[in-house]
Image (cartoon, rainbow, N blue to C red; front, side, top):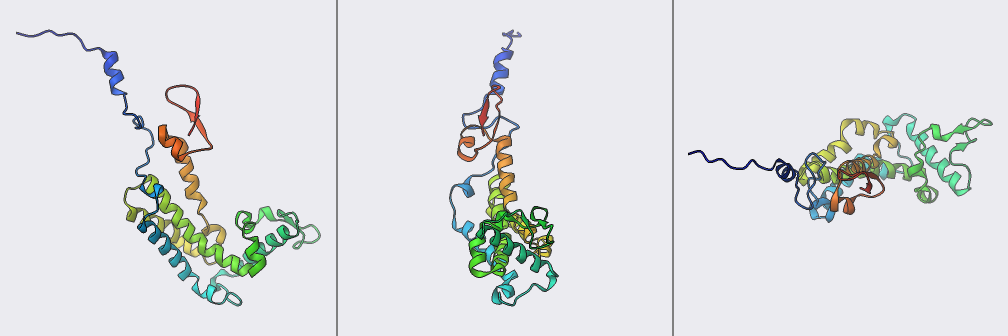
Length: 236
């Protein structure tokens, strides 16, 4: 005998299918794969950072060993240019001159420094070092810490979003910071090697694109987006 039962409530079924456990993201939304690297620094994290710093220092050990006379032979005239940019930035800040323009070159018309690789985001904060120790020290510092900082930043972002394995994040970060194109530019172009802000921008973009719930409160600030449940905007 065939038993005839009631038809299931389609509304309740549909509702159950979209019900999520509190704290979880709805299906299809971006998800951070691990939180261990972001919550605390473990010995492996410190070892990766130290390894990147050591690798960057070894690349420029000859420059650091003779800052008074050392010159990167494959840089052509670019090292002179980079050091001049660092020196003029420090001079402009020290004497309250316009940091975006100078008449030291191209006199009397002057030169628009914003149209050149002056790297004010680095040269201005490093002005005390330039004034105290000279532009060569600042140049070596930006090259060395720029490469290492790029690797450390990518390690943090990859471990936060892309992989659960710390060694895998370290390998990916090493490739991002010490790949042949980066080393090639490392001969003369600190503006192409100090790229530690790029992974941080990527992190903010991913966060604003997909963060919800308690994770949004913990990790994101400064941006907003519409939520799925209402048209109101919420900080992400």
